[in-house]
Picture 1 (spheres, rainbow, N blue to C red):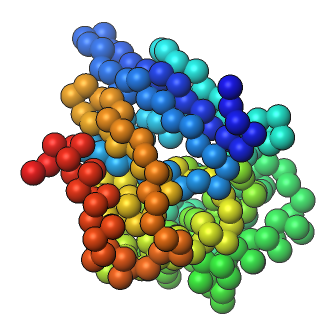
Picture 2: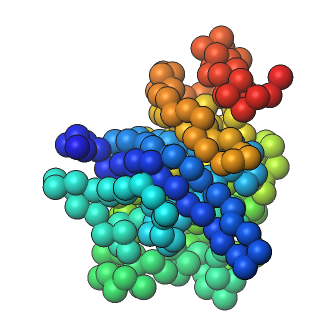
Length: 256
């Protein structure tokens, strides 16, 4: 039974990809209960099923076993409408200006454009792109393009935002800055976020909870809260409490 604040409940999820030659277990026995407003970091090696979990939540692929509950009586969720997505590449349409890129989900969903344009303007300001509404994607840096992609994922006011390694292609300094900015955006927006990453430091810095997945076979090793103070600051990564969480994840992944 889901609690009143639970927005996602996965229980015993198993996904198998099949070809003519073989079957591959993508995820096995994944269980998570996620409350509205949580920030969930999914961390693990390549091929452990992190992106598959996002696809399952977004209703893009079926599962072989387990149960999926999205939303609740007080907060019903239509997965075709109430989920935003951000990918490793910004995937902005190069022939559309930044404002028009951000507005794309609102157009697809047929939302009133006057209200959507006002929200897009506010979101661009929130992600630090005020004044860049009328430029094209090629005129922006990689980090700025990802800021626009984050604004685009929020323009239709989704309940849940799924982020699949959104900072994986950025340089280290830009990535650290984007981590701080995303943390601030999450706090201001109040959205429920699932964030896939290979970076253990990033997972701890951003997450209210962490799901650790291991490969061979893909399974969930642990799911636990990260009880660090909010708001978070980059200086926290040198503190002992932060190190305890990173060490725990390293141990779960079998990294010496």
